[in-house]
Length: 194
Image: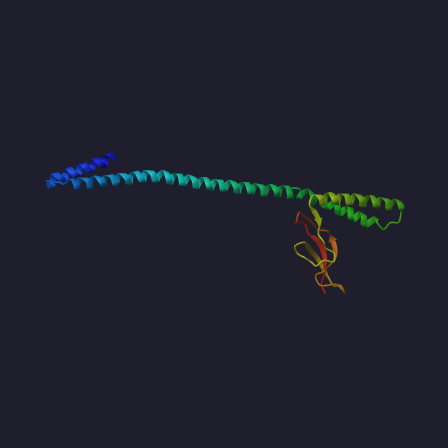
């Protein structure tokens, strides 16, 4: 800023010596122009910190939004792990349920009193087991008598049947299950095709 004032004064002296006479008004104009240049430089210096401040503020807001997005993503992943983390274990337990069902089918028609007591005990264990699975979000896919839905059913065969609608499930080979709304195992079924 000081160099500019000196430069203006030097220019005024040079012009004065070249022209000979210089009026006071001319020197005042020259000085006011010098002050304007100095003020503009001050404004530039003031604007630079404001721009820097705005840049820092924008970066801060961006990072704050990014942190919030990361927190939300973490929460969703955590909920997913809690909700579906036991998927592998429950999937393995479905074979146990299938075996209990097969056992009940095989021995339930026996008329022996001891066998009937065993069947009752197995049914109680099965029901208790299914209740525990249900409490963990596992539900059986409705199949028998329902319309075939490829999202939940796997057709093993098609078979004609009188009095039944096309695409109606005629029989279930293996039950299907859903874990918290997500298909864990599709029901394997035989579908009506007339």
